[in-house]
Length: 345
Image 1 (cartoon, one colour):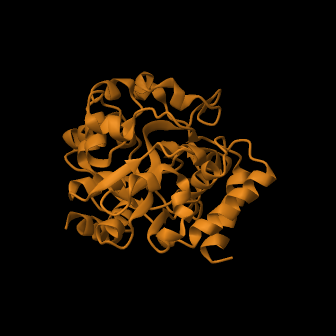
Image 2 (cartoon, rainbow, N blue to C red; image 1 turned 90 degrees about the vertical axis):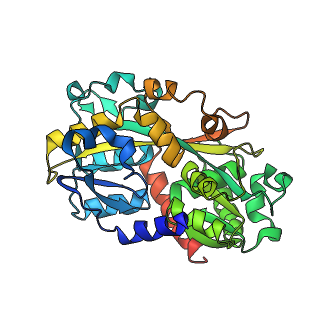
C-alpha cells in the first residue's frame, strides 16, 4: 500500500534523504516531491539533500542545538523564534524574481518583513479540519467539533502531535477564533476541552502519512487533519470526507522558507531552490501531491478551477482561526500544557 510505503520512507529517511550535497533543506516529510521544485532539478540534475521533521517546535530545537542546514520550512508562527534566537538572516529579494508575485496577505507582518529585510518567504498554505470515514461516521456527527469529545468515538480519534494545531482546535471548540488575544479564562477553557478530547485519542499523529495510515488501517475513524492526509487517503480510494464547515469553524495555516545563518552549502543553490518553488508551475504540483495552496497569485491562477481547490482550500462560511504569528510566551505556555495533557495530567 502506498500509504504504508510513504510512512516507512518518512521514518527511514531521517536524518536525511541524500542527494545534492551542496544544499541541505530541513523540511516536513512529504515536501521532497521533486515536481514542486522542478526548476531546481532542471538546473542541477538532482534534488537537494533533505532532512525531515514532524513538528515545528522539534525543528527549532534541533537547529538551536546546532543542527546545520541551509534552509528550513517553518510555519508563520515560528519565524519570530528563529529571529529572536539569531538563527536566520534576511533573504535578498533582488535574487528572487517572483517575490513580487507572493500574495501580500502572506507578508503582512513585521515579523516577516521590516526595515532590516525580508526574513521569511511564504510558499504554501492549507487548512486543518475534520477528516473522517464517510462509511462509518454520519455527516451530522462531524457538524460540530464536539465530535472529538463524544464518548461514542472513544479510542477512535487522532489528533496531531502539534501544539499549534491542537490549540487551534481547542480554541475553536470553546468559541475563540483569534489566538493573538487569549485571556487566562479562555486558555483554561481550551485546556479543559483538550483534556476531554484526549480521552478519545487512539494516537497522536506525527506526520500526515502516519495519520492517513491510522485511518486506512481502521484504527481510527476521525482525525484533525491537514490537507495532505486527505490527499493520501483519496489516492488509496479510502472513503474520506474533509469537514471544514463544522459550526465552530476550522483553521488555516501558512508556511515558507527561512535562510539559516552559516549554512554548510551553497547560497546560490538556496536561491535556485526558492526560485523553483515560486514558479507558477509549482502550484499544480503542490496541489496534486499534498493538497496545499500556493502563496503566488500566478501559481494559484493556474489551478483556480481544480476540484481540489474547491474541496480543500475554498473560503468557508464558518469561523476560521488563522494560525498567524502570536505571542511567543503564549505559544510556550500552550506547548507546556499540551505536553502535560498528552502525559495524562
